[in-house]
Length: 369
Ligand code: SF4
Image (cartoon, rainbow, N blue to C red; front, side):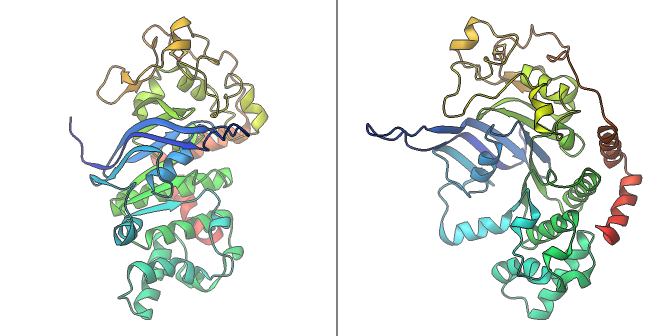
């Protein structure tokens, strides 16, 4: 089936380092290694995987903040990786980035009004000062903040409010695509669902396309339409969120899903559940890159890299030689107990999908956060 695509990556490779010379070796980090994906207009597309899997590098290549080593990125069917000059400036208006840490991405010496108004000065120079102030007030209201906050500085706000300011700033240029790199992972659990809700509302109301990068499958479950799971620079499974969560095919996806209760918790909790350490991207394993951690690995897995192949439906794809014979039960036998905090988070995520209490929290947050 043909879909209306807004952004497409075709066999994107991004390596860092040149290997050094005969005097000194410097490893080549294979951050992204042959990734192809297609994001449809108006959808929320999530890219998930552990830290170091290459998802943030991929996001920066999609945004044209980094150039790919090889491969193509098409926005509206046009190549972006070689775009420069006025065309690049216009592209910057269409695609915006939301950072993980809202505090470090906002200049502490600028007022909120200046921070949100700055992109307008660049991308809408025809606006008068008064029109710009009105637009800033409108954007602040859109993200659930009061217009009078325009005169305050970032340090006067909570983490949730600062992320709202970051979102208002991203919206200022009228983008069609927003890429969020772990947009809620630096926030308190109780605020995460509010920001997730806000992004969902904005994308629906403004017809935005969202690409969300996350290490926590729990976070994106209720906000994404489709999801791609990355491991060591490659996509190992992709499909609709429903398919990937209810019928995961790749052992790594199964392991990630089994570890949701502790993800977002302490790093030590995760190591105990996600099948040991991820190998270095500067020396990835041969064949299937997951074979050093996979309980189902066979001889072929060490030599032959599996390609993404259909896993039952048009959308669902998996890169595993033996996905059809791998049992459906979780790869990890030992699933940690859910703590009270985790239960609270799940309740918030459920509400984020069902509406109700979170909408109520969102209104409260306008006053508090
Ligand atoms: Fe495991 Fe082999 Fe499948 Fe890789 S290809 S995930 S090593 S079974």
